[in-house]
Image 1 (cartoon, rainbow, N blue to C red):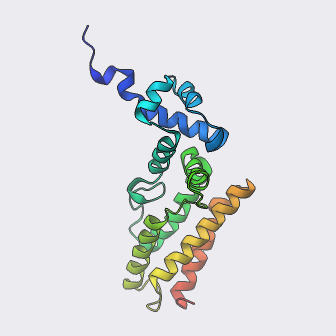
Image 2: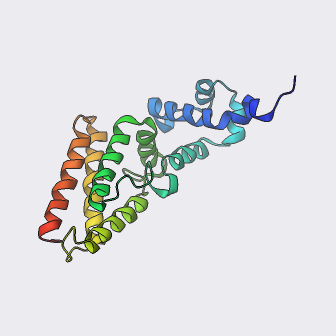
Length: 198
């Protein structure tokens, strides 16, 4: 019987270790989670965990990076051709992930616990650039007032979404998070269609 490397459990352990780390960090937080417990959750040895991730800090950084593909929190390709719909989708996508994805919640918590950053751990630039691009496109297509400054409005929209997420994470009250984020985004976009930046 021939054994290929792809059949070797140790060769494929890193994704399982990352999944276990997400569970451990969500259950216990960064400080209380241990490499040993993560190894147990992954069904592997502590030495194999430290082979892939030499320190708990390295493992936490890998989890955070997993949540920011392409530098965008829970990133994915554009979901709507219309820039206004794409902006609303961003609000829904981010808040849906916070609500339903342990990876998203853990990445936010780790940003606070590991680096001392609040909320998204200083990693908002990807969404900021994306929102700025969508707003510029909407302005060029005359879907919003030509007086709108996309860079200012992208910050405003991002602050609204991040603020709602922060309140939901702090209070544990996430019941209306998605609807609230979509509503404040739609309300601001409706304002931008008629009056421009304030």
